[in-house]
Each structure stands twice: as structure tokens, then as C-alpha cells.
Length: 461
Ligand SMILES: NC(=O)c1ccc[n+]([C@@H]2O[C@H](COP(=O)([O-])OP(=O)(O)OC[C@H]3O[C@@H](n4cnc5c(N)ncnc54)[C@H](O)[C@@H]3O)[C@@H](O)[C@H]2O)c1
Ligand SMILES: O=CCCC(=O)O
Image (cartoon, rainbow, N blue to C red; front, side):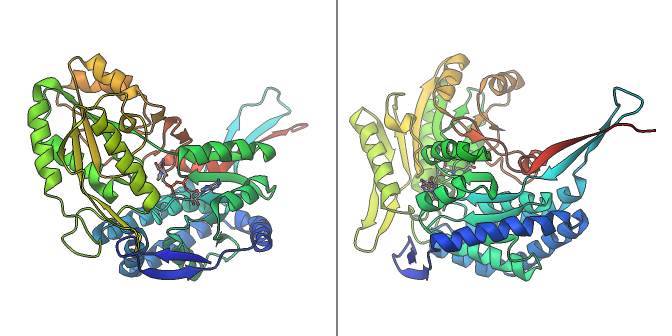
């Protein structure tokens, strides 16, 4: 049994049954069998079913958002936004379902014809994290179903309820039960069942880089197609000419969203030395003004940290930075109740940070903003690229030469130029280096669910 608790209060919200190994194997078999029927239904019918799903979700938006805030802790307004964000993937891929095109190619002989078709890969298994329990699932499920694949997901143990609700609504919308399924239980156990299964033809994972690496290795056993959306360590560069007030607003948006527990949250701010004091002063004032508390309370800006492990990691990164000489401009304050299991971190801004501090290398996943300064643009680029990650990067400048230079030289999959919120269903989301493999969203997001089949017809008239 999995106990699902509210990270803001410690209250038990629900108990969820863990699936046994036999049950999981039976579901994998059912998913594989259902693939034959689902993949042969015409694309327009699949598109309509996806549209039904999104309409039903929107009718239950408030209820779903409340469940999400209860199990994840994020602000209710962020949960409401996430329901819309999750639905936008379903809507986008309901439209892509009817735009999967093959090709014909001129043959090399008069008696031959060549046809290239795009076909669904088969049963897709997904594993998702707790930080976006709705959107991380729909941005996998929607393209998979649109392409004609069947789908099974293991949501994070911390937040299974939102995902289970969305799948119940998919069935209510008319998508057959075996076409979209969930299983609950321990990540490592279910991960092994997914990777060793020959029924699963594709594995799509969103989560930490170490788990992603393990899944890539284990998927080699059955040569599975994999998509990996992994960790990040986003740099945010503020150039000398930037509009400081605008950059501060966007930095707050990027950094403190979801209490800093977002893979594309700014993790390091790299500021030109001429504007370092002005930027630091303004961001400190903004961060210090944020209200920390329960996401169900209207005035709250920053909710709880998901669990003790996440809390300890954030605290140790702050301590390490302070020990190595960082100056605390605001924060480094906590409210934790071990008995209840609730953990809050007050928005923290650190100045005089150095690249050898843990916070400058490891993902923080919390509301902490380390600031480092630069003089020449090359130095800013070197600092920004000095990480194993390559998910998101941001920069603020109104000088087009500086902007295009930074765009050309930053090794990141997602780049926000004067934009702290670049995500969307219509664009390819994903990372370079150890941040992942493949892209989700946009026209690119359906590709990983399609195989290319080539037919050569001979002896033609
Ligand atoms: N790139 C992206 O799109 C993206 C989006 C959201 C989160 N993330 C990343 O996710 C991480 C935060 O999520 P988390 O702490 O839940 O990550 P996590 O890797 O610990 O867990 C993610 C999922 O993997 C499962 N899991 C854990 N161990 C497993 C194993 N050995 N085998 C198979 N599955 C296993 C968990 O149960 C959970 O469902 C951060 O690193 C964040 O950057 C990335
Ligand atoms: O945490 C990662 C997902 C965030 C997003 O899609 O904007």
C-alpha cells in the first residue's frame, strides 16, 4: 500500500494499492494485445477520442487541480495552470494524429515502386516524476495514442492520484481500458519489469539523470526505443544592457515556480559585473516578499518541498555555499516538522558564489538562487556551459548581437531570450548532454512513437 500524503500538512490523503508482479505482467500483455486494434482504428477516430478526453478533463479542472495541490503541494493556481498545460498536449496531438504522412520515392527501376510509411512503435511504457503529475503524463500519452500506440504508465509514488484520475477520464471519454493503463508501486521494481519486457517497444521516462541512465542501460536488453527527459541546471545570464526590472520579474517566475522544483527552473544566475549590485538588490527584495505556505491558501507564492530527501539536499547545498564563502542576501531559513513530514524553504538568494560550490554543479530543485558575476561574454558562456546538463538556459539582453552570440554558443535544448517561461505543447521540449534523449511536444514530439517502414514493390507494370 502506498500512503499519499499532503506535503504542506503531512495529512494522509489516500492509500493506493501497489500492483503485484503478475498484475503488471498481465497489464503489459493486455496493452500489447490492444495495440492491434488501436493501431488499426483510423486516425480521425483516434483524434476525436483524444478531443473527448481533453473536454472531459476541462469539465473536471477544479477537482483535478485540488487533488494535484493536495498530493504535490504546488499552489492551486499553478495546479489549475497545469491542468490547462496538460490538456494543451492532448489537443495538440489530437490534431497531429491526422497529419502523420508517409512518402513515395522515385524507384531505381521502371518495374519498381517505393512507398515509405510511418507506423506506431507498439506498446509504450512511461515512468513520470511527482513535480508535474498531469503534464508529464499527457505529453507522453497524447502523442503515443495519436500515433496508434498503446500506453501504460507508472506515476511517481508521491503523486499517483492526479495520473489515476486522468486515466479514469480517458476511459470515460471512450478510450478503451487496455489502451491506456496505469500501474502503481516501487520505481525500481516496475522499471525492471518494463525494461525486460518484450511487449514494451518504447520506454519514455521523465525524472532524474541517474535513474534515466539506469533505464537506458536496462533497455539495451531488448533494444527499446527510449525517450529521456532528465535533470537540468539552467543558467540565466543577465547582460550589461538588460532591462533589469524585466529580468528580475522573469527570473522570479522561472526560479520560484513550483517552489523551484521544476527541471527548467533557473539554477544559476550569471550577471554582468556592472549591474550586479542593482540586480542583486532587486531580486532580493522580490524574493524576500514571497509568501511561503500551503498551496491551498490564496496568498501563498511558494509551497512546500516534496519530501525530506529534497529538503536535505537543498539545505546541504546552501550550507556548502555558505561554508565556501557565499553571502546570504535573503533566506537560508526553514520551517520543518519532522513528525508531520512537512518541509518549507524560504526563498534564498546567494551572492559571491563560485563554480566549485555544489549548488553550481548539482540540480537544486528548491527555491534558492545563487548569483555569480562575469565581465566578458565568453566568460558567461563558459560558466553557463560548465555543467553536465543541457536542458534549459535563459538570457536577458536587448542587443541582438549579444543575443544571437549567446544562442549560438549555449549548449542547451531550450533557450529563453528575454523569456523565463518558454514551455508549451507546440514546441520541442528536451535536453542535450546528460539532460536527455529526444524531444517532447511540437511536431518533434510524435516522432519517437513512430517507426519508419519501407516497402519496395517489384515486377510492377
Ligand atoms: N527534463 C524534463 O522534462 C523533466 C521534467 C520533470 C522532471 N525532471 C527531472 O525529474 C527529477 C525529479 O523527479 P524525481 O525526484 O521524482 O526523479 P526520480 O528519478 O527519483 O523519479 C522519477 C520516477 O522514476 C521512478 N524511479 C525511481 N527509481 C527508479 C528506478 N530505479 N527504475 C525505474 N524507475 C524509477 C520514480 O518512482 C518516479 O516515478 C529532477 O531531476 C528533474 O529535473 C525532468
Ligand atoms: O519540470 C519540468 C517540466 C516543466 C515544463 O514543462 O515547463
